[in-house]
Image (cartoon, rainbow, N blue to C red; front, top):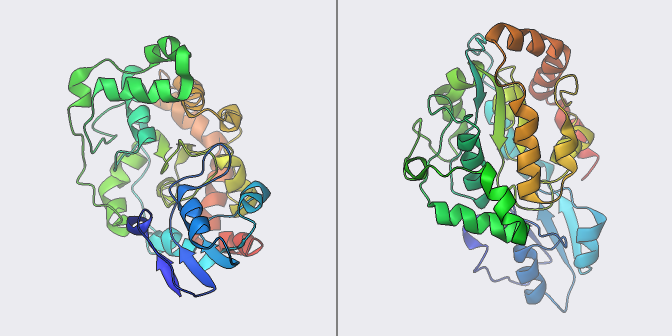
Length: 312
């Protein structure tokens, strides 16, 4: 069976096999529920039906856009990404000495937006957050305009104007894909922080996709919210079975389609906690202990796989 990796997204050809596997994020999904990778595949298979095995739980709009595809959600391929941490059973004690951590490896548009807004809000502490790339202020201005058009004068005010920040790497020795090793590199940042703002792959896409990043918090018994695609948190609970921290966080941001507007709403929601003392943050954390333990056990018991099996 043919397997298509991200490095092949723009160049793959296909044989006559009636089924193939497309791994990872499919280059994202646009606002019309189309993917550049699926568009290419559709052009190559216009005259025949084909089974497309992916790591997405595909909705009806995507199915309608590609009527010659029989979509199959591969729980196994997806779990190959999620099960990196099954042997990580002991984490450092939580200290609440820091408010927020966020880890940003490759330079997706959404990660550039995220680190910029965090810097502007005073929430990016390089002892706890990473930025493994450099870019320019003009780049950020362009990304904002791409999503908000002539409202950019308003939205630009919420993103950093600090040129030194844009030109500086902040890293903890990031090794891409080495998650079972990276957890030991990042465990002190995670357990030292009240909340982990997960920087999901391609948060400027319009349909939820799940990597392993949110699990860094679950296995260290931490709180997290994600800058991700619309309704990401909703699907994580509905399809994967991991519960939201609704005693603390307002998830209205999760319903906002526009990625810049969603990011601003997310950071604004979190910012109200940022000036609280470590004692106050610990007390708030304890409000979610039941959910934190549930999510921890849900992962290590692999009960989330039982949830996902329903969508095969």
